[in-house]
Length: 59
Image 1 (cartoon, rainbow, N blue to C red):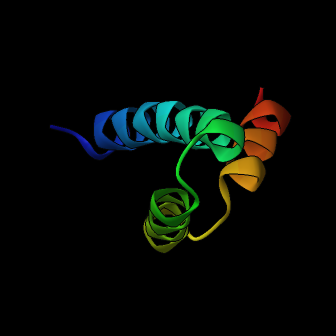
Image 2: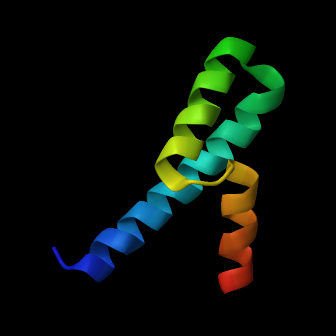
């Protein structure tokens, strides 16, 4: 795969993850939410909210 395709797939996957984490914030188990939230930050180096807002700014 080319680097561009990998970046596109990573961005698309990150968008889905960020939306799912934000939806679970209010209804999910707080312990598992914190684990997923921190794993997202480790992987993408920003919070899910920042990821989604940066995605909107690029478009």
